[in-house]
Length: 91
Image (cartoon, rainbow, N blue to C red; front, side):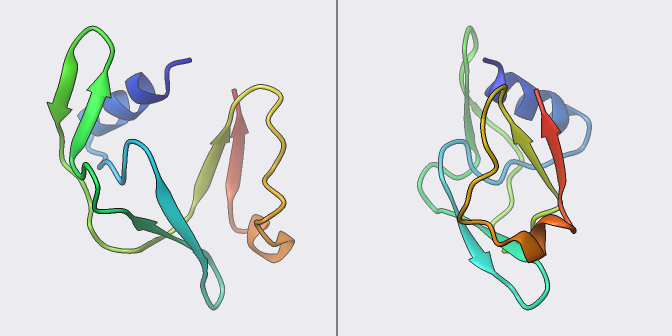
């Protein structure tokens, strides 16, 4: 549905990959925090191009946005107190 292509487009505009597959979320003091997992760091699979090495981050960051695919509900594991600080885009 274009997740990796979107990530690659954002990286080409100065963004960084956190992880192509899985991340860990943690409740911070005031924000939801995202931890990149070490597996496959800096590697993005792009259909038609194969595996690409891209700029990536290894540190923990606050979540500022979530992109939900069409029809996807907001995950119930994210406490509502954090949702006021997060921009949610629906595809």
